[in-house]
Each structure stands twice: as C-alpha cells, then as structure tokens.
Amino acid sequence: MMSTHLAILPLDIIDTLTARLSQENRPPGHATRFLRLPHPRTGVASLFFLHDQHAQDDTTKKSSILEVQAISPTNARTWFIGEGVVADGKLIVMTPMDPMFLLMYLLRVPQARDGSKGNFRPMQDIIEEVSATIADASEKDAQKDPSLNVSADDIISFLSLDLVQSSIKRVCDVKIITDEITVYRYSHDVVLENLKGKVGRLSDPRVAEMSRTLVRSLAKDGLMDDGKEELLELGRIKLACELLSQYLPRDILQHLIASYDLSKLDAHVKMVRDEELALLAVAPDTKKRAKPAKSVAAGDKNQKRKKDTKATASADADAADEGDKKKKKDAKSSHGVEKLKKANVAGMSKLSTFFTKKAG
Image: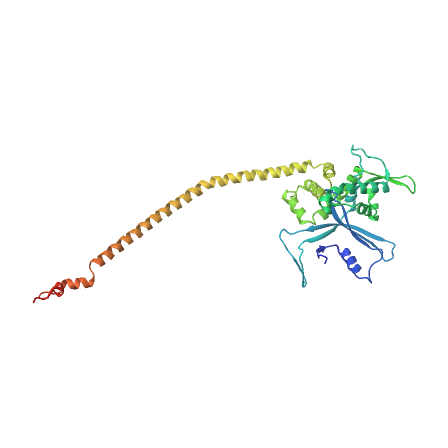
C-alpha cells in the first residue's frame, strides 16, 4: 500500500494532475516525473518535479520545474482530511524554480580547474560529460544513502527540456558556427549579469515591500526612516542578494555582493549594532547596582521575619508553661478531695479496723 502525503502545489499543476487522473480527459503529450539533481547551492542530490504539457492543439508546449521540499514537524503529527487520517505529518511543498540556477551548477562541471574559460563545445558533448561526471561522483554517496544518487538519465532529461535549452544563453557564451552548428561555453560574466537583473527586479519597492518579513528587516536597521532613501535602496539590494543566496554557490554569491557598493549600508548597520551592544552593556550594570539595595531590603525582611518567629515561639512557650502549671494545680486539689478534708470524722472507726481479727 502506497503512503499518503499532503502537498502544496501551484493551481495549474493541480488542475493538470487532476485531469490526468481521469483516463477520458488525460491530455496528450503530457509528461510528469520526478528528477533527482544536484542542488545549485549545496550540490547535494535533491528532488525536483518536472511538469511538461502540450496544449490541445499540440502546437505549443508549457514546461516548468518545481523544487520539492518536505517540512517535517519536530514531534509526531498527523493530518485529518475529511473522514480520513494521514499518518505522515510532513508537508510537501513544491515551488516553481528558474532552471537557470540548476543550469549554472551543472554547466560549471566541465570548467577548467585553473580558472580559464575553456573551449566552446557543442551542447551535446557538454551534456554527456556533465551527466557522466556527476553520476560517477554520486555513486560513493549513494552507497551510504541511496537517496543521494544522481543518475545520468535524470541529468540528460533535464538538460534536454525545451525550457532549459532556451535558458542556456543566460549562463553561457554562445557562438553560431553554421546554421546547424552552435557551440557553448560557461560564462561567469553572463551569469553575473543575469543575476544582477534578478536583483534589480526583487529590489523594486513594489516587489520587496510585498513581504512583511523584508519590511520588518529593513525597519529593524532603521532604513524606513525619512531621509534614508539611499540607504533604503541599498538595503533592498542586499536583501535581494540574500534571497538569491538560497540557490547560489558561495563563490558566486560573494561575487554578486561584491559587484555592488554597499559600504554606506555596512557602515550604517555597524553603527546600529554598536549602539545596540552599548545599550546591552549598560543594562547589566544597572541591574548590578540595583541588586545590593534589593539584598538589603531582603535582609531586613528576613531579620524581621526571624524576630517575629522568635516572639511567636516565646509566646507559645509561655502559654505551654502556664497550661502545665494549671494542670498540676488541678491535679493537687480536686473538688472531691477538698470536700473529704472538711468532713466530720469524730466517732468513726478507722478503715484499718475492718481488716483486723476480732477478739475472742
């Protein structure tokens, strides 16, 4: 029996998958599959969802690639859906992803280690080298964890997609030799130029301020105040770079940030942080000065409490002694004994005469 998982997908993907479940309405030329590819930031094998669909007239084709992520709760949980229960409490999230990020990682593989740009080559040759190199490298990791295996077929399938082919020019220098021969070479400059285009779009106020998290981050650094428009613009650029950092290798991210002059922003943020640290440094001293007074007050209260305790104990002891004296007094002179003392015993025989032998 297959396990059930709860997932969040874009609406158009849901509509297509729903239609595909019906054999009568299954769209022709439709391809849906999962691919395991190296993540562009870490290089670790990750899961991606390939959605490729032909239109009904079969003249146009819509393709997309989605990153698949599983959000697992720290404690065991379940989902209640209608009358059913899904035992696995994970939430599967699939979000559209620009294939440029995956291409950027894959096409860097054949790059020379000495830092040279390398030679122009036909794309088919590049695909074969990339797929073989990554598949061989992943075999060692797959021995420990099969989920880390990246097959050559998955890489070839991805690099052969139409949307990927159209994105190659965003990461490569391109030369057209003849009508039938086009050669490519990975280009760091082309990648950086396109990444800066993304930063420009993400740092647009109409986009950046749609997110409350980004607005709070800008406000925390005091960039939303009047008269700080220049710093605010730099702050948006830095946030845009941080957003892209989720899909960028460290060296490319560093080059991207270095392409902007953020010195004024860095100085302002440093000043804000120094002020915060200064306030934190003063706060403990204030607490220390307040502690002796608090200790003295606490000591006075403890001293008073001790005195009250002693006074109470003394009063209790006095009361106990008085009770003991009274009991002793009552024991010495009871009411019956006092009456016997006052009785007239003249002419009465002594009690001892009743226990002696009679004469004669």
